[in-house]
Amino acid sequence: MTQFKDLDPVLHSQLRLAIISLLMGVVEAEFSWLREQTNATAGNLSVQITKLKEAGYIEVNKKFRNNYPQTLCRITPLGRQKFAEYVTALKDYLNPDKI
Image (cartoon, rainbow, N blue to C red; front, side, top):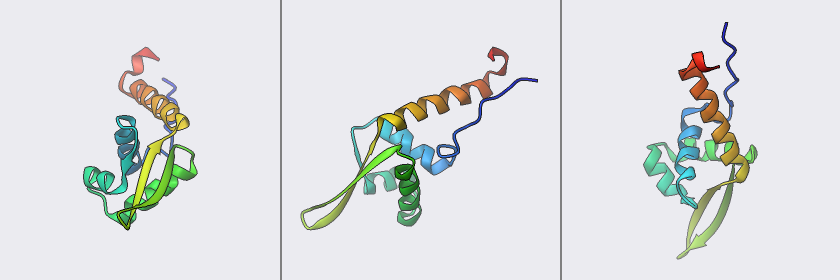
């Protein structure tokens, strides 16, 4: 039987994977942009961002812009590494004969 690698449980959530995928293509992203792109509720997005931050996959910077709160998210080097590992493991699931 083929041995599959474990998929990272932090990234295996649909919304967390979407957040990381979006952050891979930008320097940083505003919370509101991530919410629009993922079509998530603000509460759910906030919870998932916190989980990614606690895992060390993203950095979150909160500040004010024109007297309005602004939350900026940026992927960390660890987040980039874990995303690459996740993609590699997922490819093994898609091509089990190559293992």
